Length: 100
Image (cartoon, rainbow, N blue to C red; front, side, top):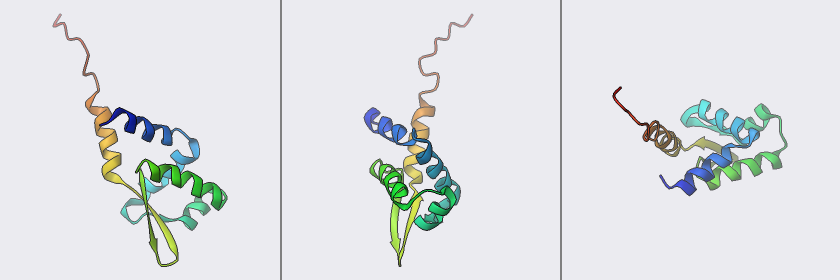
């Protein structure tokens, strides 16, 4: 994974409100949640929610889809898994094994 892209995604999740939002969407599964439902759960103004969603959309961690009059937000699971897998793949990669 591109280091700059990974850093951007991790930075977006570094905000407590965005992390809480992201966790809600991860837990919601493929169906996602409407902006109204997210706003209810987080208890934040719509403009604040839009700001935080935009930050996550910009780094492709979430996707939004208009369904009728609702805007549905969903986790982009392939991107999430790619980020997690990339971090896990680096685990102990440079550890020195001396055999002693």
